[in-house]
Image (cartoon, rainbow, N blue to C red):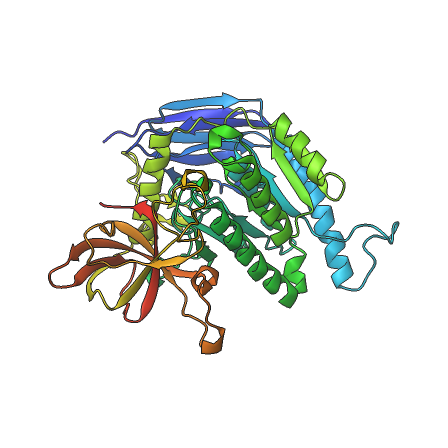
Length: 485
């Protein structure tokens, strides 16, 4: 079949932007010149594959020629990009890292000023819906690892609707040592090593994840606050044990509901307390506000006296994402977690790179196993249908707190477990004296499962997981995400 290719010649500091429809894929080859996708450099002569409704941009600092095969629903070249502003930010952060490293090595932060601030950049990125926050985090992370200084910045994702390296509903952190690729929204931050050894691609990360379990922060802001602080504590412990790693700094990507007003459904109080949780937990010293004047003023007022607050431009290429699109992306992410990433190349393309790997490397074969109800202990955090406090009768106290783990019985008809996504939790602390009611909230996730069938008469359920393993004696937490093939 004849390939349908077009050549695009880009001038210096312009970018080719594209959007894909469901089921469509695009193959892009850098014919000559220099080009990058969200800060990750493309190799000349190699073909890169994009799919699963990917929306991205190939930027060039010096000019380049691209060969594009396949059909994009939208494609154009823009010379209005905020990349110069993002590059300036990177240079400023680079100077902070170098100063911090000098201090670790016992020399003054800078020759001309012995009092120069020697803190590495610990950056919180805030912005409304569709402002390109995740893209900015990727660009800044990719520029850091490309700087040739052996930096491995910690990238933290506290947006439970994003999924990051895990599945939607999780928040996670991972040190990044090689550029994060972009191929599809199913792997927004590149591929992670799932619990299946076959998926260990060369650039896969091993993130630390906690399970929040819902797409919106308004569902249980108290729980999200606690998980953010747990994640921060783990990151600080890692940095304390490795001062060199600490000098690379960290970048925190946040949900848009941290920025938006009443439309996000999150109250101003819970927004501010979650932003404060991030500032405290990750010892933030720079807040970047993407294209939102009011939020910038708010942050200057609250934090401007003790840390740097900067308003940065939003890219004109940012696409408005609607709810059905986000739900399809959640499905792509869950499917990719179980089966690996599969994108069929456009006609005429035989070999291509997907997210930095050869296409064939990324296919998994998940395991379906039938287990007894007694093998796995299941919890929900807080009651599922919690009424707001204002709706409770006067003087009535809530019987289940937002943080209370509630045991779920698979045999009860209204358990809501069919097709539910479960987070398998790390084992409890072996020291029994330390057990406390909410210990489950402070345990990280070791993998994700989906219940595909429930057989109440025989007290058995069918579990899909990325690899085989015994679930006997394990604990899992149910959220509000469901997935079926």
